[in-house]
Amino acid sequence: MNLSLIWNLSKFANLKSLYMHTREEKLQAFGRILDVLDELREKCPWDRKQTNESLRPQTIEEVYELNGAILNGDERELSKELGDVLLHVLFYAKIGEEKQHYDIVDVINFLCDKLIYRHPHVFSTAEVGGAEDVIKQWEMLKTKEKDGNKTVLSGVPDGLPPLLKAYRMQDKARGVGFDWEKKEDVWDKVKEELGEYQAELDAMAAAQSEEDRKAAYDRAEDELGDFLFATVNAARLYGLNPDTALERTCAKFRRRFTYLEEQTIRKGRNLKDMTLAEMDAIWDEGKAKGL
Image (cartoon, rainbow, N blue to C red; front, side, top):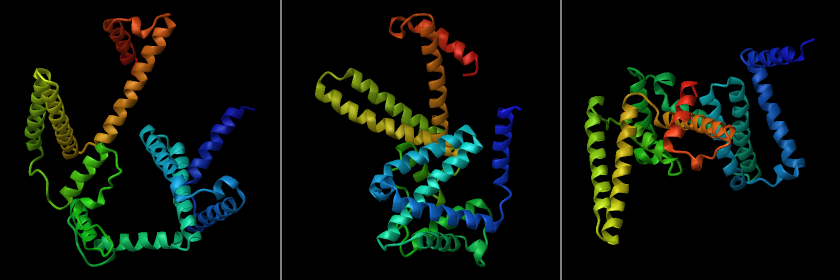
């Protein structure tokens, strides 16, 4: 009997079953994880000593692993990583319950109340013309909430990676109408910022003193930020996510550079001893192979 075939069919059946669970089964599964977490928190030395602070870096790691599963298009891995993220949500709620601050019911009810309030076109009599109107309405309602964002950009966490932060800030501003009237107009801004960045790089190269060089360096860094911000804006206006795009490029670079290293080792050579032309030739081989 082909055990590999049985294993693959089993995995397929398990994955397929995700789409056939009843509401009752879903509630039972949710109750089961709550029971498991209660047991772990009481009897496992590692789980028992965890705090919000100790879990925070692991939560960030889990979210990045979820991000990787999404980018790889691996549905089974995505299901697994979603479970890991859910565990962290429940763990924080469990810690809050122990401190008598809140529990998972408060977390869920707060979320439900927020969703109902921010979707009056679904749960009340408001009307919207489409997805764009929903976004504008969402941002305006957030600023009116008692404990909500007092400004539009306060909803963008300071801790976000800069590329994603730039995208979210621009998207938030768009939600209240602060955006280019025509997306094509953004290219003039991109070219302007690129020109200013290049000018400061030239000034840095031409500087005669260390003081002038440092001043030009600081200006060049500012202009680089402006150029990147404008480029992110252009991507957003054309419906592209710059974070996803750069992630894919990084993955592509990793594949091709790893191929370059492997081929170099196979030939008994060292990258440091090779010319750029020799490395480019192997790089192009990897590119031709679809890496």
